[in-house]
Picture (tube, rainbow, N blue to C red):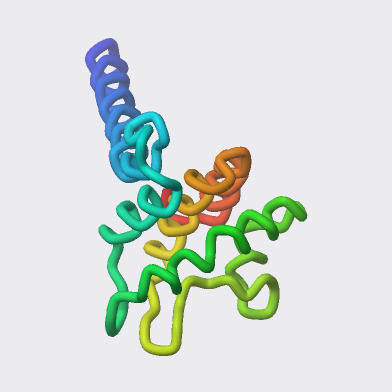
Length: 135
Protein backbone atom coordinates (compact mmCIF):
# COMPACT_ATOMS: atom_id res chain seq x y z
CA UNK A 1 0.00 0.00 0.00
CA UNK A 2 2.76 2.40 0.97
CA UNK A 3 4.71 1.67 -2.24
CA UNK A 4 1.59 2.24 -4.33
CA UNK A 5 0.94 5.59 -2.69
CA UNK A 6 4.56 6.59 -3.13
CA UNK A 7 4.56 5.56 -6.80
CA UNK A 8 1.32 7.46 -7.38
CA UNK A 9 2.82 10.56 -5.76
CA UNK A 10 5.93 10.34 -7.96
CA UNK A 11 3.84 9.93 -11.13
CA UNK A 12 1.56 12.82 -10.16
CA UNK A 13 4.50 15.07 -9.35
CA UNK A 14 6.22 14.21 -12.65
CA UNK A 15 3.08 14.91 -14.64
CA UNK A 16 2.51 18.25 -12.90
CA UNK A 17 6.12 19.23 -13.50
CA UNK A 18 5.87 18.27 -17.17
CA UNK A 19 2.68 20.28 -17.64
CA UNK A 20 4.13 23.29 -15.92
CA UNK A 21 7.36 23.27 -17.89
CA UNK A 22 5.52 22.67 -21.15
CA UNK A 23 3.34 25.70 -20.53
CA UNK A 24 6.17 28.08 -19.73
CA UNK A 25 8.46 26.85 -22.49
CA UNK A 26 5.80 26.95 -25.13
CA UNK A 27 5.19 30.68 -24.69
CA UNK A 28 8.69 31.82 -23.78
CA UNK A 29 8.93 34.32 -26.62
CA UNK A 30 5.55 35.77 -25.66
CA UNK A 31 6.66 36.37 -22.07
CA UNK A 32 7.65 40.03 -21.69
CA UNK A 33 10.00 39.10 -18.82
CA UNK A 34 11.90 36.66 -21.07
CA UNK A 35 12.33 39.23 -23.86
CA UNK A 36 11.99 42.64 -22.22
CA UNK A 37 13.31 44.56 -25.22
CA UNK A 38 11.11 42.87 -27.81
CA UNK A 39 8.01 44.59 -29.11
CA UNK A 40 4.61 42.98 -28.67
CA UNK A 41 4.51 42.28 -32.38
CA UNK A 42 7.92 40.59 -32.42
CA UNK A 43 7.21 38.48 -29.34
CA UNK A 44 3.88 37.33 -30.79
CA UNK A 45 5.29 36.60 -34.24
CA UNK A 46 8.27 34.72 -32.81
CA UNK A 47 5.95 32.41 -30.84
CA UNK A 48 3.54 32.10 -33.77
CA UNK A 49 6.37 31.01 -36.08
CA UNK A 50 6.75 27.70 -34.22
CA UNK A 51 3.15 26.62 -34.92
CA UNK A 52 1.95 24.50 -37.83
CA UNK A 53 -0.02 26.03 -40.67
CA UNK A 54 -1.97 24.30 -43.42
CA UNK A 55 -1.06 25.06 -47.03
CA UNK A 56 1.25 28.03 -46.59
CA UNK A 57 2.46 30.30 -43.80
CA UNK A 58 0.40 33.46 -43.24
CA UNK A 59 1.92 36.88 -43.59
CA UNK A 60 2.87 38.83 -40.49
CA UNK A 61 0.05 41.28 -41.24
CA UNK A 62 -2.48 38.44 -41.32
CA UNK A 63 -1.26 37.10 -37.97
CA UNK A 64 -1.09 40.54 -36.36
CA UNK A 65 -4.74 41.25 -37.23
CA UNK A 66 -6.06 38.66 -34.76
CA UNK A 67 -4.83 39.58 -31.23
CA UNK A 68 -6.52 43.00 -30.93
CA UNK A 69 -9.82 41.48 -32.06
CA UNK A 70 -9.46 38.52 -29.68
CA UNK A 71 -8.76 40.92 -26.81
CA UNK A 72 -11.78 43.02 -27.75
CA UNK A 73 -14.11 40.01 -27.71
CA UNK A 74 -12.62 38.72 -24.44
CA UNK A 75 -13.12 42.18 -22.90
CA UNK A 76 -16.81 41.77 -23.74
CA UNK A 77 -16.69 38.56 -21.66
CA UNK A 78 -17.10 36.21 -24.62
CA UNK A 79 -15.81 32.65 -24.26
CA UNK A 80 -13.01 31.17 -26.35
CA UNK A 81 -15.61 29.01 -28.08
CA UNK A 82 -17.54 32.14 -29.11
CA UNK A 83 -14.42 34.05 -30.18
CA UNK A 84 -13.28 31.28 -32.55
CA UNK A 85 -16.75 30.21 -33.75
CA UNK A 86 -17.58 31.30 -37.32
CA UNK A 87 -21.13 32.15 -36.18
CA UNK A 88 -19.88 33.94 -33.07
CA UNK A 89 -16.81 36.12 -33.09
CA UNK A 90 -15.59 34.60 -36.34
CA UNK A 91 -11.97 35.00 -35.31
CA UNK A 92 -10.61 31.52 -36.02
CA UNK A 93 -7.06 32.03 -37.32
CA UNK A 94 -7.20 31.33 -41.05
CA UNK A 95 -6.86 33.17 -44.30
CA UNK A 96 -7.75 32.57 -47.90
CA UNK A 97 -4.82 30.22 -48.47
CA UNK A 98 -3.77 29.17 -44.98
CA UNK A 99 -5.31 27.69 -41.86
CA UNK A 100 -4.50 25.81 -38.67
CA UNK A 101 -5.56 22.76 -36.77
CA UNK A 102 -7.69 23.54 -33.73
CA UNK A 103 -4.90 22.75 -31.24
CA UNK A 104 -2.59 25.20 -33.02
CA UNK A 105 -5.36 27.80 -33.19
CA UNK A 106 -5.74 27.47 -29.42
CA UNK A 107 -1.99 27.92 -28.96
CA UNK A 108 -1.94 30.98 -31.21
CA UNK A 109 -4.83 32.45 -29.22
CA UNK A 110 -2.94 31.84 -25.97
CA UNK A 111 0.18 33.48 -27.39
CA UNK A 112 -1.81 36.46 -28.66
CA UNK A 113 -3.58 36.93 -25.35
CA UNK A 114 -0.36 36.48 -23.37
CA UNK A 115 1.26 39.29 -25.33
CA UNK A 116 -1.62 41.69 -26.04
CA UNK A 117 -4.04 41.29 -23.14
CA UNK A 118 -2.52 39.10 -20.43
CA UNK A 119 -5.36 39.96 -18.07
CA UNK A 120 -7.52 37.47 -20.03
CA UNK A 121 -4.96 34.64 -20.19
CA UNK A 122 -6.32 32.88 -17.11
CA UNK A 123 -9.84 32.93 -18.51
CA UNK A 124 -8.68 31.62 -21.89
CA UNK A 125 -6.80 28.74 -20.25
CA UNK A 126 -9.82 27.97 -18.05
CA UNK A 127 -12.15 27.96 -21.09
CA UNK A 128 -9.82 25.68 -23.04
CA UNK A 129 -9.39 23.27 -20.15
CA UNK A 130 -13.13 23.08 -19.52
CA UNK A 131 -13.85 22.28 -23.17
CA UNK A 132 -11.00 19.82 -23.58
CA UNK A 133 -8.91 22.27 -25.58
CA UNK A 134 -5.81 20.11 -25.25
CA UNK A 135 -4.15 21.89 -22.36
